[in-house]
Amino acid sequence: GAVVSQHPSRVICKSGTSVKIECRSLDFQATTMFWYRQFPKQSLMLMATSNEGSKATYEQGVEKDKFLINHASLTLSTLTVTSAHPEDSSFYICSVPQSSYNEQFFGPGTRLTVL
Amino acid sequence: LAKTTQPISMDSYEGQEVNITCSHNNIATNDYITWYQQFPSQGPRFIIQGYKTKVTNEVASLFIPADRKSSTLSLPRVSLSDTAVYYCLVGELNAGNMLTFGGGTRLMVKP
Image (tube, rainbow over all chains, first blue to last red; front, side, top):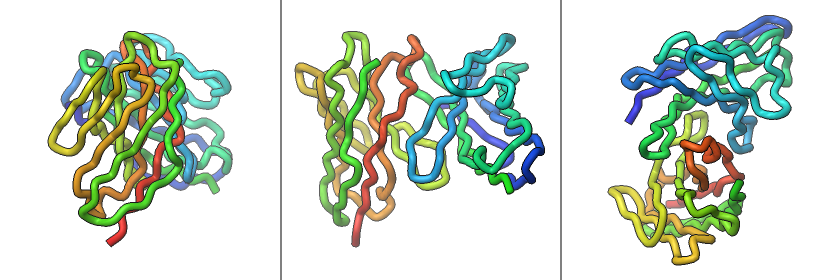
């Protein structure tokens, strides 16, 4: 299956700053990637679908101007949390779908803490 | 979208077989059933997927009755390292609807 990496693995930032999280598909070309958010003791929640060469599709309730997604190549999608606030502190996980098997390959996640 | 219902938590002991059942009463004809495992502070990991009857791989078995309104993940002879949250997803990824995670089942394996 696809190998997916994320960088950084954890980040601590001050309130009001912006943070960029990278998701890389190391051995699989991905026209689509998914971004999830997971709060402590809760399930994963889909935030948006990242589409290579076009705009991302956001789930209802997710602010597209706050969570900027760029999918400039078939191996890289980035999620930028703009003007981060403490309530944005969460575990952000990306995934790459392997369409032929209806399976997702997940990255290791990025722990964001906003002070 | 087919909604899934799982027990919130389960306890077991090392060496036992664990069966986790997922209800999905509204499963559609083209939907597959997929199970993922997630350890703390890690991304989920694919365990097994099936459409009907029984599927077995090196780590688990998946039992799906004829009406497909439920499925059971079976973990043989669990160890402490199987302590994790297990999620059941239903849908067709190509249609973009196998992306909704339910609450999951938190399995605790005790020595």
